[in-house]
Image (tube, rainbow, N blue to C red):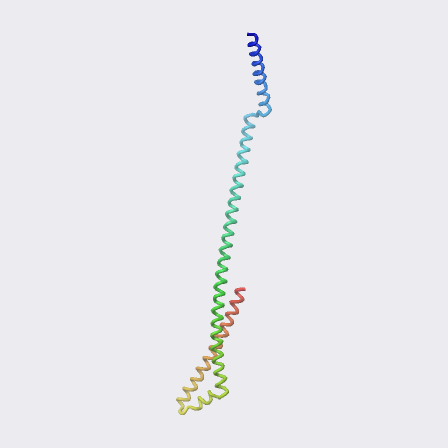
Length: 168
């Protein structure tokens, strides 16, 4: 029985030393209720600040993405405008080629007519005044057509040059 008492006393000593050690360990980290509340509030403030910074970063990312989308849209619009301008230039080049060919044909005809004095012969070959007036009117119409064709050709060339400058 003495052994049991010795064991009980030893156990009691171990338990009591353990119980004495706990309050001293807690005393090192123990704080008052006010200090704990202040620390808790500081942690809440820090968390709120972090959440606010996260939201601001998300908002900035969204603004940047919107700017990127806007820039991409403007690029696509500019590409479309360039394509339309290029098509206009191509169409203008085709009109210029057609007008140039027409002008060359008219000029060739004029050269042939002038070398033979065809206008004078044509007008002077009239037998009546009415026929002469009609022939003069025909020569004027031909001359007006030539001038109009040349003017159209010059305007097309000018428009084409403007489109080329605008495209660059």
